[in-house]
Image 1 (cartoon, rainbow, N blue to C red):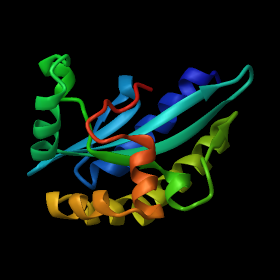
Image 2 (cartoon, helix red, strand yellow; image 1 turned 90 degrees about the vertical axis):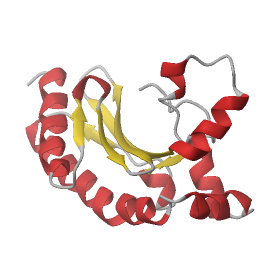
Image 3 (cartoon, rainbow, N blue to C red; image 1 turned 60 degrees about the vertical axis):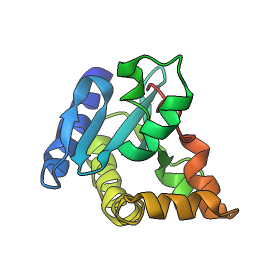
Image 4 (cartoon, rainbow, N blue to C red; image 1 turned 135 degrees about the horizontal axis):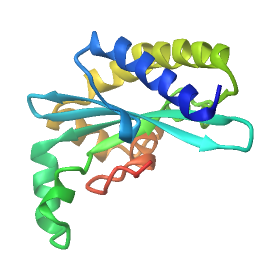
Length: 167
């Protein structure tokens, strides 16, 4: 099976699993998002292509509208549509679990099944607790003023007020 079909299998499979948690898919962006009362949450897959296969990483981002509105007032050169796509914090799965970047290599359908199972497990066991913890302005403020390892993990991938990387 070609890489495009394997990627689609992974994305649609995760979309089905994440739909149970209120996430909608954006297949063209390789992401899943969920609107919240105060902003939105995004889970994103990044594909790293090789000749015969590809690797996948997974990350999340949280947008708190109140925080982003303040930061975007300062950054005037951004267009209104660009400002709507900024995120407050986020991180890659392996960086949170202190393994370093976590990658899954996909060559065939069996690899897709393994990656899907492990990525979904990581979302449930790692991302969801972190997302729950940091979905208020107060908790993000507390994180921002810390000079600890935890705060560096979340600001390392998404700097406050900067665009989520385009994958």
